[in-house]
Amino acid sequence: MSSFMEDWAERVRTRHALEAEQGLHDAACEHRDNGHYLCHCSKRKREADGYTEPPEALIFSNPTCPRCYTETEHDGDNYGCTACKVTWSDPNEPATFTDEYGDLDPTPWDERAAAAAATA
Picture 1 (tube, rainbow, N blue to C red):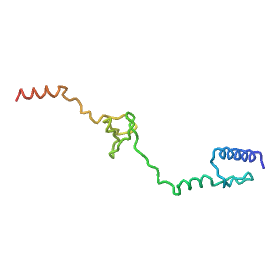
Picture 2 (picture 1 turned 180 degrees about the vertical axis):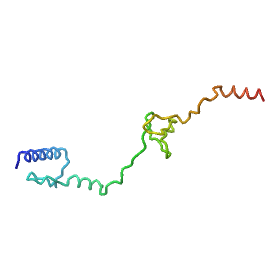
Picture 3 (picture 1 turned 90 degrees about the vertical axis):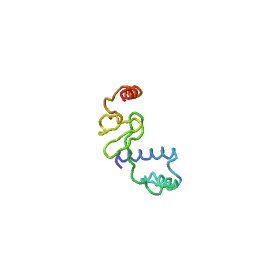
Picture 4 (picture 1 turned 90 degrees about the horizontal axis):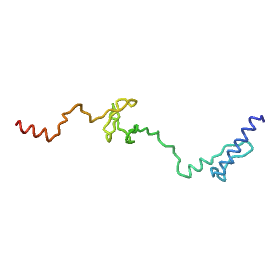
């Protein structure tokens, strides 16, 4: 056996010994130092834990808001965070406020109501 293969076999034996110390192999382990380096210990443990079918496809979620860290919503065109009242038309650009209506009359409501009542 070449020195490369001997080094590889020694690394496999060392790794298996460390894994066995960590409890990752059971008494029925098929690993042998004679060159049979595969075992079904992880499969037996997985099946004993009840995982006999693989999970469905991954679930990809919307990005989180960088301000409040909640998951954003997508309306088909834009991502938005209702808590922060912002929307992103391009997720790689800064957000814009959804409650910004331009320059509104800064006069308080009660003063505007009084002025309207005086002219009526």
